[in-house]
Length: 290
Image 1 (cartoon, rainbow, N blue to C red):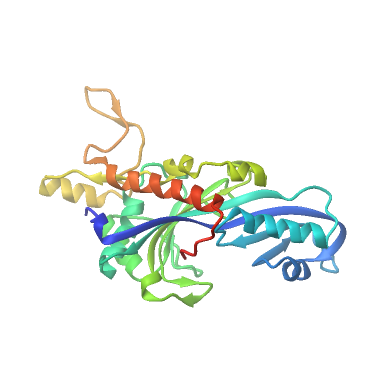
Image 2 (cartoon, rainbow, N blue to C red; image 1 turned 30 degrees about the horizontal axis):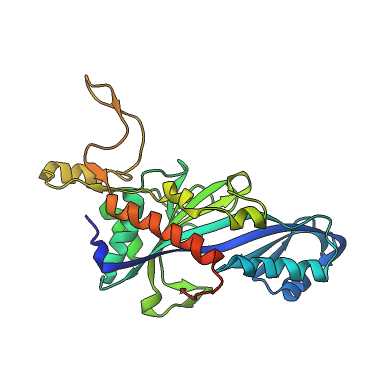
């Protein structure tokens, strides 16, 4: 039940940043995508002729804020914009790479990301393998381990539309291509969109401390010395680490399961890796870590 952190190497990364902008003259999303060199451009007010004036552009794997500024500069030099581009969404991932961990231990770490998560962002929680008809509810821990080992993702909220959305999964592909084994990772993501995004312009982004996001990646851990009955109860609880009001007979209320303690070690790792992310984004040297 308890993850051996010594068997993992941790890091925090920006998975993508989405910017929105409006052009004075209608244009085609594919031509904008090609001209500014980004992964994806989506038209927001597309006409019958496929042209639009309002767009969002998605920039993946941002390692340094200067990369995003370069996209903005190319956009401004190629198109007349009505206003400066705005940052409308960001996705930050916390990853655990194997440092001697087996596949089974990697999957267990994924399951624990959910099972021991203190602050889930929504009551909308589900598991899916990504195809129609595969969405299921979330049940006991043993069930989760079984489903995750067969592939799939835990969703909390809707990362496509909600201000806050989370995904938890074993990442072994990127852009539909299988990653080398040493790039596989146990991943938990927070997607912050619209009002949930902590900044909307490049200047504020450069001064943002990503350690402020650590509350999204706060974890508990099972207590040592649980009885056999307590182990059964813990395993049967889908989200054991959740912070929520619980009634205690004759003793008021409490916020965490009595079967858990704070995972001080993992929470400290999260905080440090988010601090490192802030430093990397603003460093003069771009380091490739993905």
